[in-house]
Every structure is written in structure tokens, then in C-alpha cells.
Length: 132
Image (tube, rainbow, N blue to C red; front, side, top):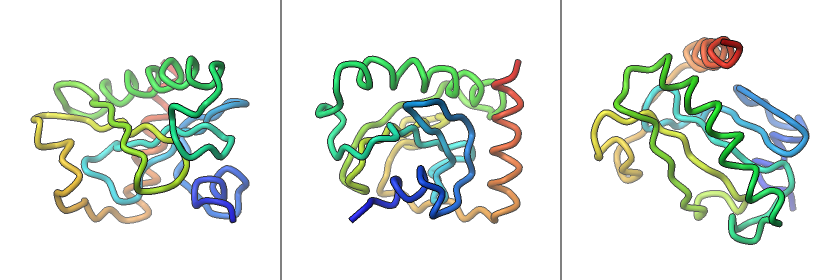
């Protein structure tokens, strides 16, 4: 059975997409820890990040770096934190989270409640920053 993320890749489930190439997709987390919290996934459904083939493993962070730099320019933060947990959805993914403090990357914290319009606006702003 396809994962939630595979359904986003196939277009079965909508997402607030930020960037995409032949191997990777970045989209906003709809239950973010901070505004701009983005997920970067390989398009192929592989559960564990360290099971990715060499090509994908070598490519995911450079793909994520461009998005993190765009988020840093847009969202007031000290830096964009990176987290790979892999227990929430059985599809390898990297969290990019704008950080002001260490607690901003605490996944046990309550998630932000953002409207669809707020998420869409954030996605569009990050995409615009990618073009710079």
C-alpha cells in the first residue's frame, strides 16, 4: 500500500509543493513546528533513509540545502535545522525547520495550526526565494 508521501508524489493527495526534480520533492509540513517547516523526500518509496541507494543518499542534502537557504532568507531564524527521524511515515524524509532555539525542533511540542491559505502563501514565498 502506498505511503502518504507516495500519494503526494503521484498527485493523489495535494501538497504545498516548494521544489521538485526527477528524484526529490519538497513540500510544507501541514503540521509544522514552525512556519516554513518543510519536508524533503525521495520520490521513490523507501522506508529508511540509510536504505536509499548511493545516488539518492548523495543527492538529498544538496537538494535540501537550496530550500533551506531560501527558508533562511524568508523566515526569521538563527538557522534551518535538519532532522531525520523516520518513524512518522514509512517513507524516507528530511525535516527542514527554522530554528530560533533548540526547543524549536522538539517534536513533542504542539504543532502549529495554519490555514490552507497561510500554507499556500508560505509555499509561494519560499518558491519565490528559490528563484533568487
